[in-house]
Length: 549
Image (cartoon, rainbow, N blue to C red; front, side):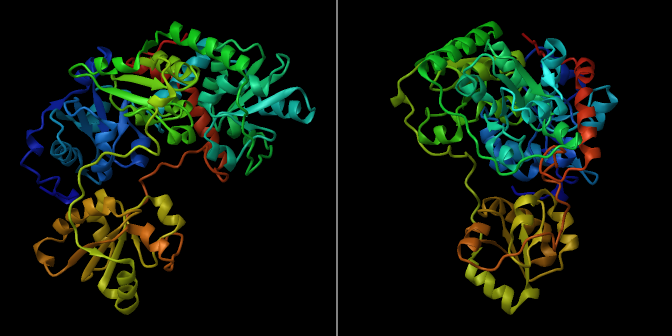
């Protein structure tokens, strides 16, 4: 059965029959460490404005594309909430999840307002569990740090210092501290000795804000490197707020460690992991973890390039630093088990040590033969078969837009960022879950064409659109662009950029105050002030199970 957002109020086959769980019941399960997925089905921007600590964002627009990957066990306890413009999206999301085979979908009693009214703590921003944990680490361990002015003085004086950027390489290239080398989080303990072989060399770790700087610095301290280590206080935000210039387009990467450096890194990482309660498991024993009603996530924490070259069957790629930073996205089932793999005995134990301190049950795969990493390329994303929908080729669409533009309503369901970067001339940007709102802005047409990057999402949305057009528009044709925007671009057809036609606001992504090069100073300072308050919010919430070594 296909439904659209407008049907949510009137949805009766399952909507009113889904059981509910109260704030108290959800809290009880979190405290008992039982498996539960608390799902916010709004788009990312409204999600980022207010949500419970352990809520994971699974937008209604993308449930068919993401649910099977992110919530692998179909009998997982799901608790769902979220509304848009007064329409409760949760019953529709629950119905879609039930159609995908999930057997334990519940609605959050009273939704987000019910959570708030019951005294539940609400958090802003994204990746909040990881960021709050980072603040707790600094609070309890007094992680050493230096101000932007102090670090700049060391660089200007050509002191014996190395600056290591713990973010993803693409973030580092966008803007970086002068002289910094890219060493994404999980690589720090593995590669720091190759960059600072002299114990007298001072090591500075930075990210855009605070979390990855703190966790990266504390990783090096925990692993016992002999050098003096400090975080760049407040990262590139602090650097910019101090009025200092950043580099753009840097490309320095860390070398591989020597055998002796690798051995030292391995000893330090494994010692930390054992102290954190991490367990090791043989590759052939992995099936034993999948007991009834236990979710197991498997991640290869090496770099994307290494993962693509060859990885263990059934393991997703998730570089360790980002996995610690984005745990709520990668592991939305709180209480699940996590298994990590690498090929060096450093990155998996180091990543595992942090996840264990965050309250996860974590295992590291024991050393295994290179031949076991028999799968190459990127992992396939599981999703149901897309519905059969009428198609129009890029060439035919181009001709229709040229010869009879008033007959065509072209709706682009790709991400807002991708649409702004490049789209088909004449296309309207819209969010799938808000197609009813979009149709109020888009002039009526004889032929509606849906597209996105590949047209996969568009195929799932086509039935939504047909239902919304309803009996009064039986003459309207609905089809998808064959191959999506990618096929149009590959054909060399015209494109445009920017925001010419916006049918719904681009709320699919929350703009991080620390990303890009044009964030206002006030927004950056507000973000830092928010981070400083997370320790108190953790205490007020009380469900985190964090334990800092």
